[in-house]
Image (cartoon, rainbow, N blue to C red; front, side, top):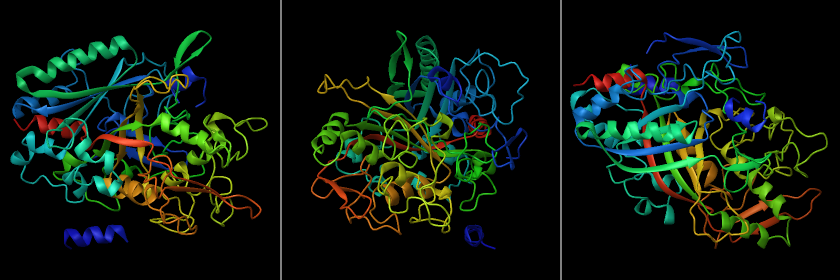
Length: 522
């Protein structure tokens, strides 16, 4: 059988939660259990940690590197997985992330928690980076046959995800989309001291032997609020919403997940595995197995424009209710699906239950017309749950094959409504992690976010897009809020895009084995 025929056949919380007071390759490693009781063997010690675990550290720094001397660069990458912490900071794997935090399903509850790590380190390599590292030259069999989007790169495919106008690659910050964006190194830290010391160590390593040249860096930090006279990190983003509530549950994953109506996602949707249904693991096998792909993005948020727009429609709808309808949750995190009329329902909703709902049940009941949560709301577009939509595997299915894992953090200071025009840029930095950029990231952005016909059972206006992150034209933009008892829908129109892409890169997230493979090329 040809390779094409084979593929055709295959297709037929932790620290932060305590701070916030919330609840919350052949394998040689861990057997972890999902909430469903099934078990899947994942080689956690070979997989980069942030693919499977949320670090929940309060700050992050991203370094964009260009290869200087290829051989030195390959050797330097090898030092990051040598196991010698005294020589170089080490790549964080998924294996030990329970250290000092809430234990996961595969961890021994009797173990005494060890000291929290000061930092977590991860890296991604772009296709131009593969070429600059001379991997293709030294490994002629190198193949990303199932992953054309990765080879094309973010700039080439920008229009597919709505990165046009101000978000067009020609406007991206220096270093991205021009072929010199080779390696992204991401450092999470538990404190400013740790961030400074490990950043300094990395900068020295990058420069040794002209291995790499740092062309850009940016910092993200959790937005702070004062509690009992002390500043503490929050899960909030600049638009004012509580973030980090909807977690992607992975079957056999190492984290403990709160109750959720959705079926667990198969691990091959995020970790490159032989049992995948819609791709071949990149070759050579030891290079591709246990890796993943991620889209790095820097997104500017127009907080002033968003807040002004809410107020400009107060004659039609209460601004806070409009904010909830646009997102799908009230700003405190309470979902409209569970509480459509107030962000403070009687008796409250326990934090672990804030993600435990469906939009449409298998029998068609629920909120199919969007009376509680509009079908076109941001949250309902990026994770339609049981809503019948474009690309659904089967009616009443879970829509899991297009799910994403987002690892992001705000940049810029918290928005101060008393000084809205301070001229300071605010936004989000981070990764959208998936095994198939085409079938997950590009599908969600292209079909669910920026297309009006993503929901087959509900007719949205022809120019309707995601009201929060869609690419909008004020002359055509529209958001419809259905009303109960046959009352006319509320139509909100004339708004611009509230987000702008400042940078993007399609990255391969190599396994520890793959990084050692690269270092061993000489």
